Length: 255
Image (cartoon, rainbow, N blue to C red):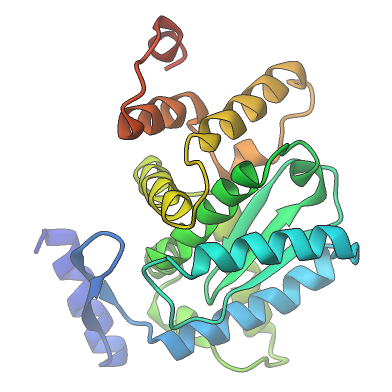
């Protein structure tokens, strides 16, 4: 156990007495969690309430059915199926997608509109499901919020100022994006889940290349996807390496 993990383990134990070391089905390693699945679901429920107040959810039946149908196929082959996954389309033109703890996955109408095939939609949803499977948000919040605040925002909805402050901070942390390593891991799992669900995992390259080209054209107004999903050129290269696709000179130049 590395020194920072040991310090976290000791301090968390003193505060809560409920720290557990669990096998992470995504990383195949033992990870430290202060969160049970029930607490994660409660946190997701509270965050979802906040999201529905800040964003307008689409009521378009075509969008909703398409996302849910593809998303459910990914869930059937993912490594963490004890959660009840929910899929939502946000009625905004920004090209973005994100997920929160507890099984909640969101994709913006703007991103959905540029995805030409179900394979591309599947990769985006698989990537977001992968973040949930690997508990990337939970690990990030454990490090950022502190144990007591993390427990607070996972409780049933309360009206206290500290609850809403904690919820706001948790939401901001998740929306600020993940580490490079977390993004790579989510892409690796997205390749696996897409393929196992019967979709073409190479579609992930098309998605990222579309976003990268859009970003270069719209530099005056950066795409929100680049705030929550950085390292696009490196991710394209990584996916090609996973799939055994030959790299080009541009794959190295864009790093």
